[in-house]
Image (cartoon, helix red, strand yellow):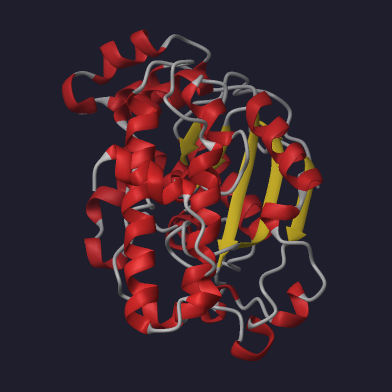
Length: 332
């Protein structure tokens, strides 16, 4: 598929209900996803302000692809690889995240981090961290953001300090198509979200108030997420204005999993198959989750656990600008 064909696919409109065979639905999904990947690549490569088409074209195609996947049966796509989920943040994103935490320039951070960011762990602990951070966690019905839906959003704001006080917390369930009342909510084995939680809720893509509030928060403060590439990928194809904010540098993701991997010395001594970078295991090592407790896999609860674990790690490494500040009781 070339750019012209991708644009044609994005501008065409095929009603999924008229695709009556598995072969037709599979073909349409594959063409949609090829076009999404190509269009995103072209849009990101173009100079800022000179993109050949609005990003809303990509969002609209992703919306259509979700309908195709619903018709085909999302449970049948389990194990079918897609292209819309990034495995990691880029090196530039990681550098920008450290710079935002420490209020210094990305160029200074990159000089310390060195070639291939081999010394980014040194850069993390070289200068103190401070400021207000937005934490976010999403629960979804699929792995790939052009196939499924955001069904739970958790967001919290914390000023980085020893035992920093969580100033505000927000949680919202988002609806999905009615067919899942009978089929069951996909991935419920992970997040334990049921139809009763989602019944009558407005879908994320239709909730303008939620979208506007979320975009404002993400453009006001850097945001933290554990494996931030996941939230970044999902917001890219679900939140209007997010891609534009990311490209312009107004939205800065910070990956707490990368923080764990680079500055927690325990991470390097544990076997890989024990998943030492997982939030649940990291939290147990830092004492923010008891040995017999499990990660909730609900937005706000996971954000709060992430923040408490990050605070504990930063305190362990003496990374706070106000290391001697009076500890405050944590609240929401």
